Length: 71
Image 1: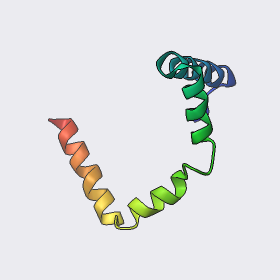
Image 2: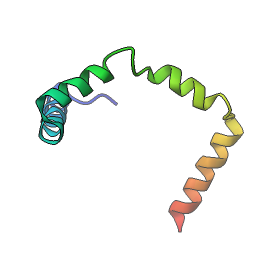
Image 3: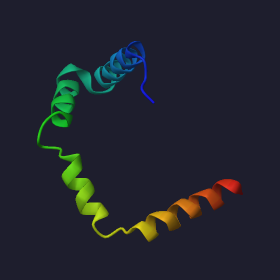
Image 4: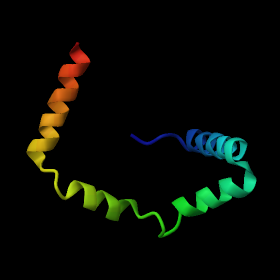
């Protein structure tokens, strides 16, 4: 499901505004650059923490989450 472009632009604008309000302009820009640089490599980190998780573990976690939601 793809969000309309206007919704993505609004989300980006609101997100940057929130960062600017909370962190100030300099720290907000530093954070944005951190997320857009090779310093933060989500793919490599994901491979590290998923290396020890198997399909059976994921199924068990999903079933537990569903059971908890039914309570």
